[in-house]
Image 1 (cartoon, rainbow, N blue to C red):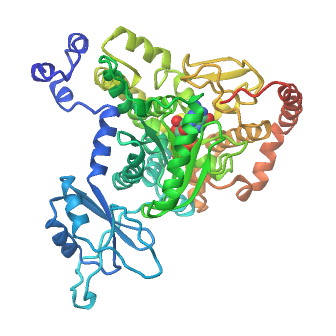
Image 2 (image 1 turned 90 degrees about the vertical axis):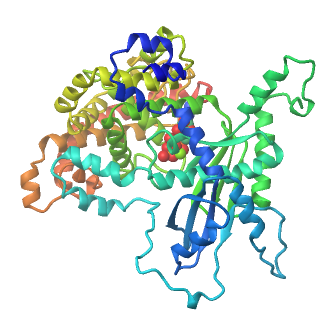
Image 3 (image 1 turned 180 degrees about the vertical axis):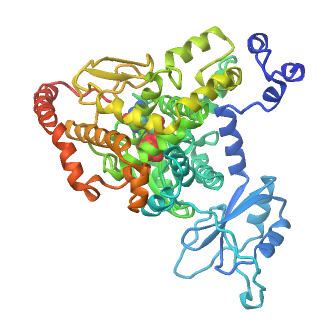
Amino acid sequence: IDNDFRFGRWPLCLYAEWKEVPYAEVSTRKKTFAEVQTERLDQAERTVLIKCPSKINEKKLLQYLSSHGNVKSHFFFENRGISALIEFSEKGSIASLQDAVGIPSASEHHVVPFKSRLFTFTLKNPGSQRIEETPLHLSPQCHIPVKDLIEKLCLADSISSQMYMLLNEYQLTEENIKLRFLACSLVRDFTCAYFPDSTVKPFGSSVNTFGKLGSDVDMFLDFRDTGKHATKMKKGPFEMEYQMKRLPSERLATQRILSVIGDCLDNFGPGCVNVQKILNARCPLVKFAHQPTGFQCDLSVSNSIAIRSSELLYIYGCLDSRVRALVFTIRCWARVHGLTNSAPGTWITNFSLTMMVMFFLQRRSPPIIPTLDQLKELAGKHSCFCGYCSLFNFFIILKTNFSLLLLMALVFFPLDVLLGEFFEYFGNFDFRKNSINLRKGKEVNKPESSPLYIWNPFEQDLNISKNVNQPQLEKFVAMARESAWILQKEDKTQQIMDKEPWGLAALLIPFGKSNSSKMKNRMKGIGSETIRSLLDSLKLNNANSQQKAVGK
Ligand code: GTP
Ligand code: MG
């Protein structure tokens, strides 16, 4: 502990108040969100992608590469053929490789002189190469289809283990995360041409611990480091004019920046296709498909609210193993029942749904996660914390101190209990009157009549689910009630004997397709209520349409 303290790894107040923390816990300090990001971005800067022939000799490839530097890690994956992600120990190895490669020459193409980090590995005499006996391991970059997942789930021994199984199948792998950071780093190679100090960082589900294999990569162009530099300069008599081009609004500056970066990616970005500039959206962005990594990407300009939301969810996701398993389960359930959709529309977004799960975990008794106000209070007590993100370490310690309580909570409130409670909670939530406030961890009167009102935790008076209409909310409530019913009433032993999907597997089959007669009976119960709410919503919508939209 003394060493950790001496090297400034622990703020004094933590040392004083939590000195009973076991040594092992302190010496294996978990990294903060910012530290993890920095480390991964640094890794990505030392990384290249190599397209390989279908019959590749792994040893040979590594042998060639070793003449340029030490390969720290590598893996192979399938994406329009086989590719290898190669992480060098030193950044200089990339320049050495770039200097040694040939540039394709074809009379019908004109080569744009940009040294990329994408390579193709070809052997002069592929026939003469001995193929390795051990087959190449290909790291999966997408999850198994729901149909296969359902079959797997039926083999589990409890609903809780089904939920952890789903988490294991769907969550991002270490390799997929590396690929996501690489995609950002490759885009940065372009943004640096215009803004040398800029960085491109992922946010959203790529980093908030709730990312699923196959989800998009949300990235933002960050000038924060440039900002820091500018502040330093203020001390002297000089100001950098090139940074100071004045535009009438931040939005206009964002639009201009994204416009040139979008054009640049479109014209010269290797493997950047279907580039769409969506500059008039509430949050201007450039959408594109990045073929070398296989990701759909959304590039925006630094948005502190979105970053803080990502950090907050990261903290919640790391606090308790049940949080992520529950979120993945609910997201998958919502997708199967058409409650969410990858296209924007009037349905609930994954982001809103995640916030609803967090709210439920704050509200249940005893709560599983703290409210934002509680986090803020703790941050206030410990003045050395500059923001919520730094609280992460604090919670690791908190967890250690209350490990017995947590263990009890795990035993008495296993995941299947939480799942059932979630459906019951939102199946009976008074959406007409109440809104969801994660800051207070309380249901509060709706400030306006949107069908679903979830307060943006970092920007009060903004509703993150303003897009959701009444029929979509109705559908969510009906599905939640149906699912609560299934969990309570279904007989696992009987279902196994009848070779029917049970537990979570039964919840992941569109309800019309199985037990349709049972479903109809149960829906009858809520039918009249649904009609009543629809009529109410018509009144609400009418009143609503007279109000001016106020952003998210
Ligand atoms: P998936 O991509 O579906 O896996 O989840 P995601 O969390 O990445 O959602 P999405 O790609 O739609 O959005 C990326 C990030 O933008 C989210 O994690 C939020 O931080 C932010 N975001 C998305 N929608 C909203 C919104 O309506 N309001 C606010 N304040 N932030 C949003
Ligand atoms: Mg996303």
